[in-house]
Length: 391
Image (cartoon, rainbow, N blue to C red; front, side, top):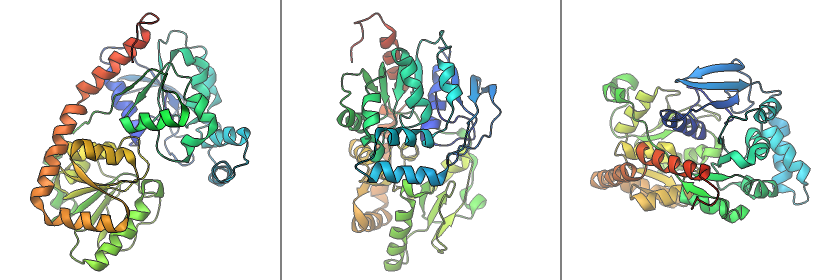
């Protein structure tokens, strides 16, 4: 159960859902229930409603009844996050506007009596908040919770205690949710995510394809404020003013905010998976400035390719990943960003050592066989006779 699903959807939770569904489908009957939306800003209907097949998995799509109003959503966000006197009804209205608004999807769950377990992705979206309680005894939640204001809303505290089980992506995410909601008694497992490296990346010549030569810094993902892209731009431009020889910053992904007109910054737009991995393979450092992550897949992808990362320590998930793996450096504020960037750019042995540590960590903790084994064991435990499951 997820807010959007398809080969064109490259988002973090959506990609994790598609990958995990594909792995589990090899030995289990897996069906995906989702919406017809592709765009994540307004949830405009894109796919045809009804039944289809994506990568061999049956998919049922429900139409979004109304698009998200950016203006109304902004007003509701201001009310629930900035006004201490807001009401529970305000919070529910925020979830409804956050969407994607699909009452038919929620109503359909009551008729799916042959389903052993419903796996809901992302706690803050409509299909999870309103759908999970209807099948709570058969529900598993993958919250993909981040350290933002939504986790503090009271309506989610009770909600996060309802699932039969919870799958977390990192230990930091589990600690965050436990602290916010007091749901430590709900059975849970930290499963992480596997990494899919396309074989075709080796055939991509980055210099010939993109004209990118010499050392470069790479940002890969949605280019918007929630991902810290605006702060990355300001930090990079300050560094470049002080250090003109700083390697160029290459961006890949969809831009939801203007990219600065700066000779040191180049936006390549949307690229294929093979091209993305070729760029990761050739970069000096992958930058991840996001303050809000439940798990950064692109950081794992960089480590799978043996590349070091520089991440924002405001995100405890990213900081924890770097500390456990030894695969990168992290910063708090501009001075630490600039110092770490200079150090990484100047020290090739350090970059190689960090990249090697990250690669070893991914192989040990994030191999798909490891993730799949953890997930299957947990789900089978939930289906065992009462009292047989142990967290």
